[in-house]
Image (tube, rainbow, N blue to C red; front, side):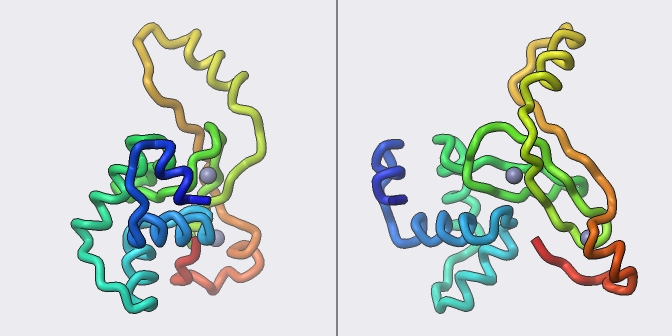
Length: 142
Ligand SMILES: [Zn+2]
Ligand SMILES: [Zn+2]
């Protein structure tokens, strides 16, 4: 299915691009370190620079959507329309919130006199998992 998707966006389907898309689709929200680890585990040695280039290409044609986290980190997800996110400040768990963004965005844009080109809504807090396991401080999961 990604073959067709890539083709429809004018990109050649290469094993690396397919693998990037598959990994992100499985993980939900994936950062470049996880991608690189996943490639390594599957015996594909792809330099970070190449991964960055692929992620850039897939984002610029709209197949991938980027989620900017504090500290300059970026997670990638398969684009599926704007949606708010929840981020756990303890374990880094990032979750999609199934809420229509339209109302929030319209109100915010009406209040903004500048021209805008993107909108993101991020709720920060502590996830249920961390609330019930307060000792799990260093667990990094998606
Ligand atoms: Zn958490
Ligand atoms: Zn998301």
